[in-house]
Image (cartoon, rainbow, N blue to C red; front, side):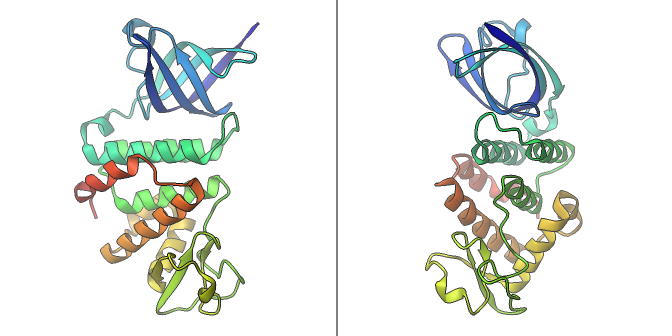
Length: 257
């Protein structure tokens, strides 16, 4: 017995299967992360057109068979294609990284409407203009928050006390964020040290989100510190580095300030 499904979501990943089929991972409003089987997706453009491409927002009709790991896609319609992203390497790298991060932060079949809304907003901003590192840092922070992993930046993650206003502070993923001078000796030896000003800038970004990223970009030095610190934080919680990070690092010089 197959149940009909109507889904709205973003294509996070596609994997070709056999000679003509495709397996698609979606982040949907209704079911969270879903893996779907698109029969003959590569053989017939009439059925799916160009909809089954990464970072496409689409509406889909599908069938779910009890006991099956994959739902079967019946038809799709593009809601937003974000076409401008696809003509720019820096934007492609950022969009691919954002989609992989969203995919890795959630488990299957758990709705995450906040994360989906954030991903669509970030893709829309990439579609509208150049990629900027500060916006990607904002996306990372907000995606972590949506997944229940928000790093603590405004107070010590271990004791809750005030952070020093000057100097360099430990940022320990295992402890949950920034550490005050009193708790710093308990930080992992590999924990990065960030300038207090960088932590304050990240705390403002955490609060202001993507809108603040455009109005208050990180200074170059703070941007490098923030990138490495959040990368370490993500690797700790995800158990490794995202595959898309290498491409993102390669096109780094193409990103605006």
